[in-house]
Structures are given as C-alpha cells and as structure tokens.
Length: 477
Ligand code: URA
Image (cartoon, rainbow, N blue to C red; front, side):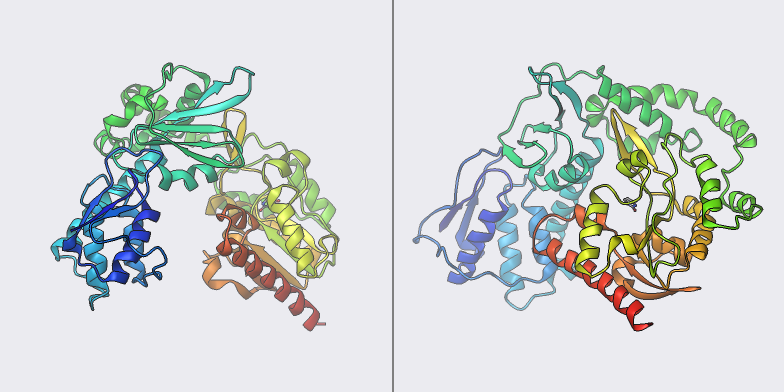
C-alpha cells in the first residue's frame, strides 16, 4: 500500500502532482491510501511512504476536460475519500472510459456529482452571503473584514470572485477553514481563524447593506419559503439585511399597494417606449443641439452627476460606442477617461487608430450605479434603459456620419442591432443598418480577466478587432 499525504484542506496542486506520479507508475487506486486532513494548515507537502517516492518529473496527464473541471471542484469537498474517488475516476477515464462522466447512473460518477454539486452550492452561498464590515486600523486606515463559515474547503476557490468584486478595497476574509487577505495588489492565503470579537451587525456598513436590501426588495414577489431555501437560516447571523426580513415580510402587502399607487403616478420617462416617443417629438438640427437636449434631460438613474456626451469631431471615420460612463467619466464629464478608457486608448494606438481622430461615445449617457458606503458600483443598464437612450445614439451617429461603428461589449451591440448579441461568438464585422460595423469586447471585460496568457490573448484579439476596423475603413477608401 502506498500512502500519499497532501496538505490539509483543498490541495489541488498536490493532488495533481501526486496523480501524475501515480499515473506514470501505473499505480492502481486500490493500492493507495490518501490523507489530507479536515482543517487546513499552512504547511505540509506530499510525502509518500510505502514503495518509494513518486517521480517528481512525471509528465502531465491528459484528461477529458469535464474530468479536469470536476477535479477542481471536488478537491474542495470535506469528504475524506475525495482524492481516492477522483483517482479512481482518472484511472477509469485513462483506461478507455473517456466519457465516463456521461454515465450518470454509475455509482462513482453519481457520488462525485453529489460532491461537485455540494461544493458549487457552497461557493454560491459564500459569494452571495458573505458581508464585509468596515473596521479601522489603529492608524485610521479603512479596511473591511468578513467572517464566513463555509461547509467545505472553498476559501481559495472563492478568492478570484472577491478580488474582482472588491479590488479597490483592503479586506480580510476569515473562516474556520482558512483566510484571505487582499491589500489592493496581492492576495495572501492564511490559516483557519476564529470568529472575531465585535463583528456586530450595527455598524455603518451593516446599515448600508440593510438599506440597500430594503430598497431592492420587491414586496410584490415575497415568497418566504423560497427565501429561506435560498438563504438558509445558518447564514442569517452574519447578514446585516437579515434583520430586516421579518419586518419587510409583514409590511409587504401595504408596500404592494403603495407601489401600485406610485406606478399610477409614475414619472414621465419610466417607460422606454414612451420616452422614445417623447424624444422623437424633439427635432435637433445639429449635434450641438442634440447634446443640449441630452444634457438637460433627467438622468434615468438618480444620482448620476451629469450626462456624458460623445467626444470627437463630426465626420470622424470611426465611431466607437461603449456601454455607459463609469464612475470617473461621470465625475469628469468625458467618455473613456477611467481604467477601461485607458486600456482602450492603448489598444487603439496599437491598432493604428488615433484616439483623437475617432468619435467616442456610449450607448447610455448616464452612469448607473449602486452606492456601497463611499463607493459607487457600476450596474449594467437594462435592455429597456438601452432602448430609452437608443434614439439619442442614433441621432448622434446620424450627425457624426462615421464610415464605420465599433461596438464595445454587449450593451453597445444591443443598442446598434436592437437584439442581444453574443459578443465572443459574433465578434468581427457586422452590418448596423446605415453603418458597417465591427463588434468587439468591452475593455472592462479585459480588465476583469485574471492575469495570464488567457488575458494576454484576449487583449491581442481586441487589438486585432480594432485593427480590422481600421483596415475596413481604409479599404473602403
Ligand atoms: N466604459 C464605457 O463603456 N464607457 C465609458 O465612457 C467608460 C467606461
């Protein structure tokens, strides 16, 4: 019997390394005892005893993609048999059963599917129900702290999600199975922790969450059973908004009535069709006149600082349409001046397009966001909101008369085509009625990709799309 010892918790790298060695030596899963204890510790490496060490330089194992994906989730499960089960799965997949995961009734496949499902559910719960509390360092610096109790060893697996969502904050997530710390630049994995003292539900952050939850809660759709199923009571203790649930359920009928009454007196432009019809009655004769109308209009979303108008000259050969202004654009009143804009400027340059020679604008002219403390978090516009702004965009492009329109991301593509476009599948040349166009990704999508070859390739593809746009314009003379 060979004994393979992995780090405690979810040791994906250790498991893969051991697997390579075991496969290279052709070791039968029945001959292996795996250990990797319950609670993760910081240290521990592969140590095998029995019939000599595993080869350190064994070649990678080529596995069917679904098997590789299953391994990544199942190693996070608490089940002490997970490694043995996965080893058996790999053994069978490499011995003629490459489509083994299609055999749902197979006891091994069924058991692994249950583990996979449990881990996915746990990941979803942690993404949805973890709440940060604002705490102050002794020097007064702002940081955020969260406590969460996952069922499985998912802490490392959730890290990319929280880094992406809360990249600009300094935060720590503590759990009984490990911790994460993000300082805006780097992520550190730490040991298991105990629930910190004083993580009460009464601080400002909790209040903010509660207000946000109350404001997004739709009393007409209240379903307490589904609510409890989706948000099990276990998580309520750490959820500031949970304190509001009973009162909101009690007040739901009255609030529905209030909503019905408010609907009857709804503000002028709530219905996109009516808004478009109202706009169509205005007939601006010039771009400057159109811009005056846009500037004077109420933001569709309350709280935006100003309308962000298109930038560039009429007659520009290429118009570039983004989604909506971001936080920085909203403050400065100019499109594409924030991080996504800077990436766009660089990519345009590499594609041989001078930013100042292009016309840059957005499908939606106001910043849409939700407030989280001092931060304003971007929210994508709905299809109805895109439709609301579409009339302006079409007028605007009519005045600019570009030879080609580049859409960045799905919202811009929706605005130009009037249908939902799958950008990654349909990217490249596309006709937009009066204009020829090129569909490509939004630079903020590139900013969200984890650093690595995938992100580098995605950026190169973006530049290639822009280059193609330039060549189409040049080709059209
Ligand atoms: N993203 C956009 O789509 N437009 C901007 O102006 C800035 C960011």
